[in-house]
Length: 274
Length: 197
Image (cartoon, rainbow over all chains, first blue to last red; front, side, top):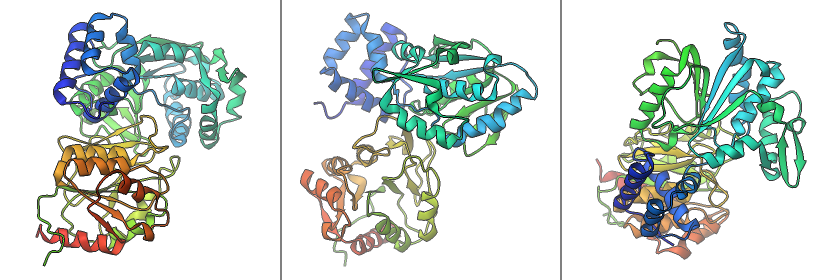
């Protein structure tokens, strides 16, 4: 097992991916990127040379690579207090001005937050009034998100979170158990569009009333975070909301003065200037 | 007379702990000088769904306010930092924190191995690593990384630990410089701090 990777080797890998496949990992946060790379090398029993060769010679390998490299650990109703704030403050705030609105889950991973959001909307009785876009870089994980099927062993934590969110019923109301999987009711996803999108290189593709990007930008360095936050600002209607992870902040970034803090504990911001 | 043969080259102190470490941590944070020069970085196992309360509980007796940093916050001298619940906390080249939600390691998030290992990479021989009482093996590998990079390693005397699995894991994995009771750790840190005045 390889114990450590030189920065020079990491650079070789990111430069090859950049030139050959068009993905830019050069501004990823170093320590987690290195851990993911070590994990990938161990999982696939590869040396760095073998990895470089595979990335160069096997066109299909990049998707597998992206799926292993990106962090796809997530929960339904992670930080229940956040979801209560979405239900009790943010959505009512949006509804003051619009009957129907649009949400973007940027970096949706396996879709747990999308499912959480649709359940919030369903319980508010407005699921049909909301259009949701859910995007990720990783096409393998997008397929998982679309299938809305999760290992049943994950449901204990999800259910605990839901109870602390204080939902109307039980999470069980929304899925059926089948061969060790929790299969969620597909009606929840009827207004959800899943699509591949690269936060680093992707264009602004729509305007939203609410953007959720929680615990995604932590894998970027501040240079890249700043760029992504500028794109989010551009992708929002004035008075729209942006939610980031509980240990993220945007007070330091270039567009910080165009946002107001709505909920400092849950890191929810409101765009107040174009 | 300085029995530990210390100097002022150290850049940070990193402390790991789990079950049975709370009293020890409180003792350390309450008895070090108020003007302790180096940043103290804590990674302690904690309930993942309880986000609030822990940092406040530590701060009550601490001579310096304990903070849970945000992603990419700079590490400042004299700061006392605690890894937040449900995130791994790494130290980056450039002397700042980064958070991650990767899988649990040793059943833990935050994992002590992550904080100690990344601190070892950044501070190399300029790091003091301390591992206290705990019921699993998390932190052992991190202490080995610190030692391998030339840092100074201390574990809590196993007989003083409520549960000694954690310091024993470190002792089995690497050459630990000092095995100390919490009182001696405090004395050591006070001594270390004198070199910065």
